[in-house]
Amino acid sequence: MVGPERPQFVLFGSSIVQFSFGNGGWGASLADLYARKADIILRGYSGWNSRGALEVLEKVFPKDAATQPSLVIVYFGGNDSMRPHPSGLGPHVPLPEYIENMRKIATYLKSLSDCTRIIFLSAPPINEEKIRESLSDKFHDLGRTNDACQLYSEACLELCREMNIKAVDLWTAIQKRDDWATACFTDGIHFSSEGSEIVVEEISRVLKEADWEPSLHWESMPTEFGEDSPYYPVGPDGRTTVNLSESTFQTSNHRSKY
Image 1 (tube, rainbow, N blue to C red):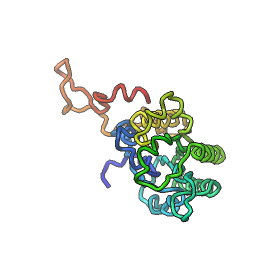
Image 2 (image 1 turned 180 degrees about the vertical axis):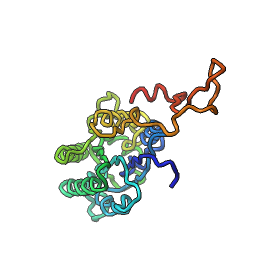
Image 3 (image 1 turned 45 degrees about the vertical axis):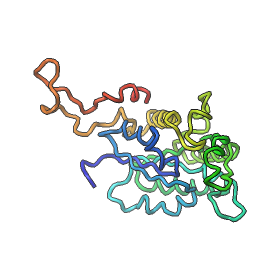
Image 4 (image 1 turned 120 degrees about the vertical axis):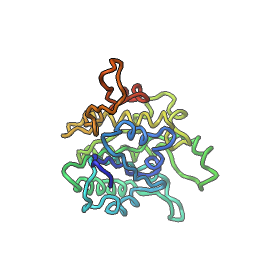
């Protein structure tokens, strides 16, 4: 553990989480937004479903940890929605079990501390044709369809309403863009930088609108070591320094969206 201690935001999910630091991903964008404000911790497991997540929940989020996360962003559902394989193998989880698994995950995360906040991401749409082009040589019939993704997305959102959990409706948000099917994915499933931008916008909107105390929106959080310093570069007046603690040389346009 390094100090000073910052709030921890944990990204917990399947490959959409694991890959979120590549290709201009949404995890990397959050880490940029929250530089010197919160630590973005990646717990992504490619290929996993809600059943596997439930099995390791206590290992990923031990109740006796010295510090509990301030925020957990959870994504499972796309793999669960895949058709069952005749062999009995594969990631498919029946819809009723998926709902109960996600309920158990939410209940457990809520029990970590009174200050742990939760956001669930619902299953996004996919580009079925692109999946066949990109992944058919790697897997035997992925069996992933938009019809199934929509069912699991709606089930996740309904559970969130029932349990009073904040949610991002990725199924709807991604499809607001006219060219979503070609622009938002690298392989038909995983997000391109354009798709990730939508994810960050939606997460930021939820964080900004939430009535949580303290607020977890990046603009409302204190900057670590944000005080003025004589060691900063000297300003144009030649007598004072320029505080760079919230420098936006590379990210001013990027941050203004969120």
